[in-house]
Length: 270
Image (cartoon, rainbow, N blue to C red; front, side, top):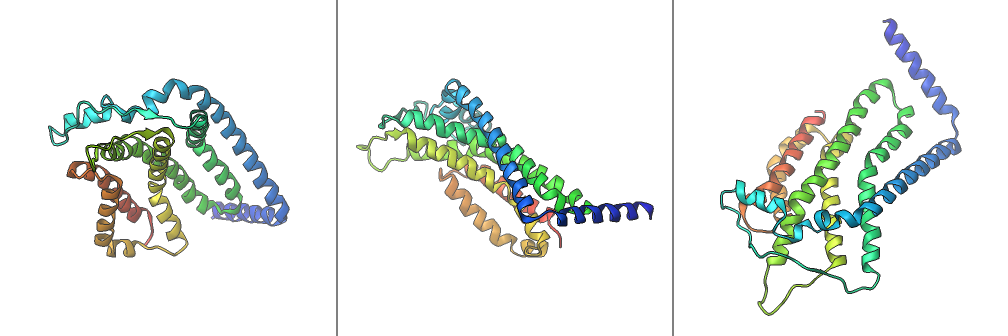
């Protein structure tokens, strides 16, 4: 009983403190949050810009060669179900004078944003925390942590599975033998960053479902009722993401998406 009174007193004090802050005070807090986030992003950008030339071939361009360990690993565990052409080796070309320098900057910014993502989440959390009650903080804090981990897991799935197979399929697809593929640097980097970041965002599905459930928009019974429809939609999405045609690759993408859907059902309320 005494603990309940202390919690109520603390919540009342925090509520009064929040009410005493004007709109411009909240705006000032938000401005400093943006400033700190920009400083962290700048520090990460300096680091990624310095390191990128040393890891570009082995990390960014890894999927362009048949030596990419993911290709060799999947060939081994699939027992011949997935076969790769041994002479797969794509040469990336540049047709723009400033393209390599701009690619260096753009790729460094993307990597810096991925690295600084947890700090961005922390700043968002510190901004909204004073407006929450103690019981709400206990539920939302793990959600923010889980959302951060899921973002990195999605980026990893995009890098190791989605992008390599999508890129390889498109490179080996042949409309006519007389057409020779020459991949521009900007095109490669654009698809590389887009697919990886998209998968990172897609893996935020459970967190989004939880937020919508807290707002009363989404409920557990709704997701259960339309599970079959969602399965078909996820299969189509997996086929679009990895249009290689073989069932093994399709399942590599579909299974994580389906597990995300089931996880969304688990984390939301009835």
